[in-house]
Length: 171
Image (cartoon, rainbow, N blue to C red; front, side, top):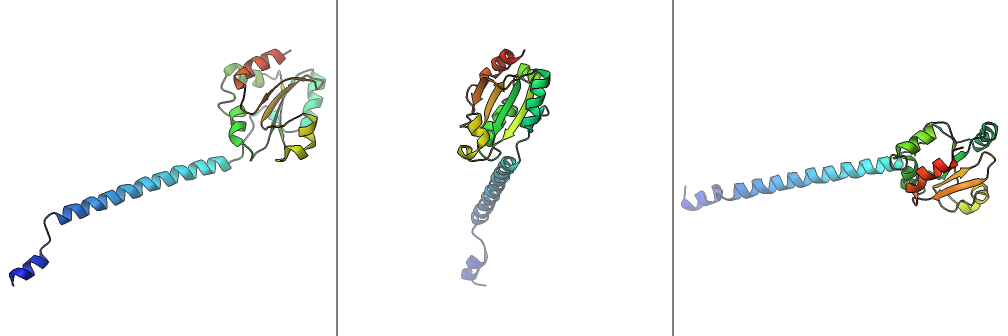
C-alpha cells in the first residue's frame, strides 16, 4: 500500500462529526415540520366540524313562537349560518359566548324559549333575514312572548352586555 492510497481510504477526522450533525439537524427539522402539519390539520378539522347548539336551543322557530306565546316567556333567537364566520357563532354560543355563569343559568333556567335559526348564506335573499332585519350573522335577538324585539347583539360586538340583556328581558 502506498501513502496515497491510505489518504483516499481513511476518512478525514472531522467529516463524520459534521455529517452526524447534519443528519440530526435534518431529523429535527422533519420532526418540527411534522408537528406543524399535525397542528394545522387539527385546526382545519375543527373548523370543518359543524357548530352545535347548546341543549336548550331548538331549531323550530314556529314551534318556539307558539311556546313563547302560550307560556308567556321571552324568546332568545340566534340567527346564524354554519359556514360563514363560524368563529363568531362559536363566540356567541361556545365557551366564550356563554362564559358568564349567570348567562348560562338564565338560558338553562327555562326563562327563555331558545331558538337557533339557520339562515341561508345570502342574507339579502332570505325572507327570515329580511323579516327580522338580520344583516350580519350571528345576531342574537331577544323577543317578547308576542314577538316584539326587546334587544339584539350583532356579530361579536357587545357580548359583554349579554348578561344585562338577558336579565332585563326576564319577566
